[in-house]
Image 1 (cartoon, one colour):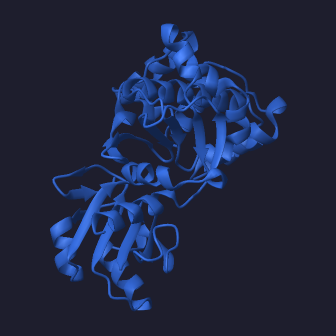
Image 2 (cartoon, one colour):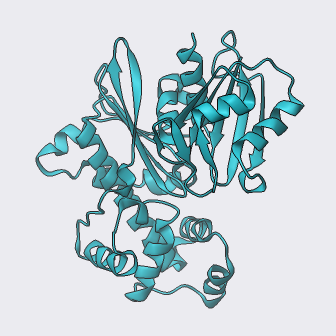
Length: 329
């Protein structure tokens, strides 16, 4: 019996799996508000108190880097170490992996219903696969074919330098450098990035929104859903929101293409995270793929790479379960 989890700054989802049922069929599952707990152990104890099972191992995908078997959630004060977790919870072994590594581990298990295709392409058998996931932040990972199966590798590529490709993006780069010093892709292609793009476009007088909408933004705790919803629902009367989403999609396409080039992902590129499934109409318009394929002499290669959006919201949990079950098979 395996305990697997998707550990995020906002919510933590835990589930119990068995080797007989496999990673796509949890025996039981529950989601908790992360900020209501002081540590992961407390969440797990609450979960296990409701589910009497003989757990021997655990695997958790964590929204943050995992180094030397320990991790800290980026947007929580939780600190985790594999050995400490195993001792506190009386388990034989605990695995901590990056949340994007979790999503990457789920890729081989996804079926057609889990995906929305942006570019069918021509996948190369056993070619490398890239995963880019804009949510609150921007996560990246990749998979390589080794010993007859795909093996996932973590990355913090979302924090690499943002690279503009036209005059208005050059202005965004300067705007971000003035505000933050370092301008990363995460400052543009994420939930963090959408308010940055919107504020920049408003500053350069790139259209106006109604006063009532600006008041909504001023009072909102979460700006990206407001901007995205207005851009998709009323594009003709929402110049700033529409331009913000267009710029976001173009930047995401460019960075997804960069990741594909760096990992030579001829097996495909997968968009994970919470944002892509919510903006499918914008991704389907062509802006994303134009930016993705616009790589000079490698444009024709880029056009052959399949690109898919992951629709399954439990992909990180699925990947953690796969990793944990296969580690003890």
